Image (cartoon, chains in turn orange, green):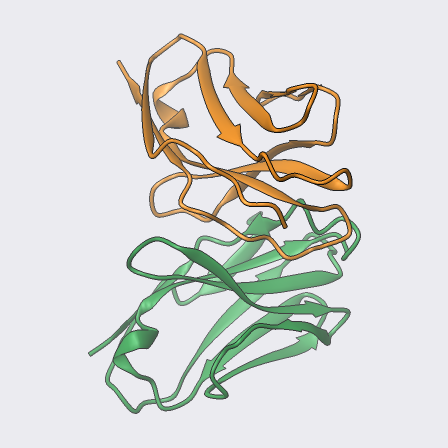
Length: 110
Length: 114
């Protein structure tokens, strides 16, 4: 699976959009981008995933660049409850083994 | 109504003891997993079972033995506990292997070995 690079930490004001970047310059054509988050002392939570096209669900939007070398997870209206570590994971779709990196600690401030 | 549950939530024990952690999912999923999150917060997969069969066994010491009595349960038994086993252990499940990207995690079991 391709390696990902994320900032160690980010801050966001409550009610504003949180944009979390992820670099995956070595991604191959059959690898998907997945996002999970882990709120303090809880188990990780699946957010969204995509291959080429931008994706949106009730939690977030995923924007993947045309060359697929980077992506951005967007939380449109961040709340205090969105404070968590966000993990960007790249892997082949048929590979069910998730490999978590260090992630980005997003702190939403009031 | 908890989707993936684990017991106990906290476990404090001494070196050399044997302990078990239980996991149950009520989602009707075919695949279950065990992850370990160490003090540095790295989350690593340990085992995966699909329909009660072992699929993934990462380089985990033989002291760790998973057991799946049925599709809804995946227990983790640890023999001769060591200080380095102290960590938070998460159980997870997914609908099946093909849809293994969306895993549902339990609340974790914090194991402290003294």
